[in-house]
Image (tube, rainbow, N blue to C red; front, side):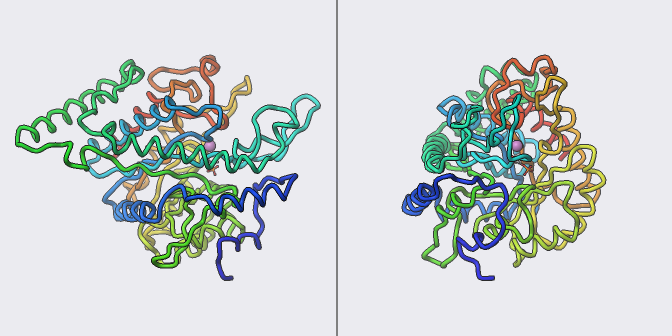
Length: 441
Ligand code: PEP
Ligand code: CO
């Protein structure tokens, strides 16, 4: 079948909203086609080449952010806190692992969620499930839950504002290693991971002072004064993705310019489905969630479709097995991909979700760490490269996952439980996890 940006329409597309007003949807997608792309061809190619280094075992991928971005929780503080946290984690990893760390946010497009059920029932009221702010509203009313295509445009503009702010932080000096001590936010300062981080800060400051004493100016060296930061999201809503595909005039290739990297979720990775069809034709790096239901043969067939030329940096396999299943299920899949230039990354979140007796969706930090540790141990045993981690986290001081050095209990969860979808690691838990990764590597 010949690929074009709309060829997915000939396949069955799971998890798509049913819009009551199709004219309105067409008006929105027409508009998306005329708007400037959110990212550029060059930036996407740049990430691709950095991921190629990850696939060669010479760099590490740190991917993380909200489960679902929202229109309500949007502003300077959440963005700044997330950006700073990813910087802290990346400095921790660079220091501990001694290789470049590629930072990719779950950000600027991560507004739509796949759901296990189409409907939600409360008492005797049945309404469509909440599918993320890109589709409908969170409130449990008929009005809020009706899918509205204008939300695609709202997501686009919020993504544009997000990228504008984050890019400024990345290049204007905030991310300069000279400022490393100022990233030590009040919150991290009260966490026990602080001492280990303070040690890293001290080492970096000594190195910078040494360079200055030798007559080098860190500010004139972009490697030290700036950083690269990329945006990724699940390519779930194909009307939105198609509207932001652009053809590169230089080589004729098509790019999904809704973000630098997009991934296919565990629920929509059908070989013959619309999401795989869409992803196979775009030039971006692609992620593929690999859950416990995926067998060797199907994985290889998916790789054949998504990365037919075995291109380094093209495909990131994001394993999300669960801490109790990874040991058994992951090694055969890694074995099957030995001759492929794929990156293996660990999502220790989505296989470890459970609900408390009070009905709160949570994850145990203990299980999350256990899955990460097993992921690294498996790669060590097989002699393959553990290429990265994929995390749901926030720089805000939330109480959504249990455990960690703050010892968050089931009874604490309600204090600051703010996620719109899945429970996220808070800043302290995330930094602790980064130290675990450096210990494992
Ligand atoms: C996600 O990453 O938010 C997600 C829904 O993951 P998965 O497709 O692995 O369930
Ligand atoms: Co999630």
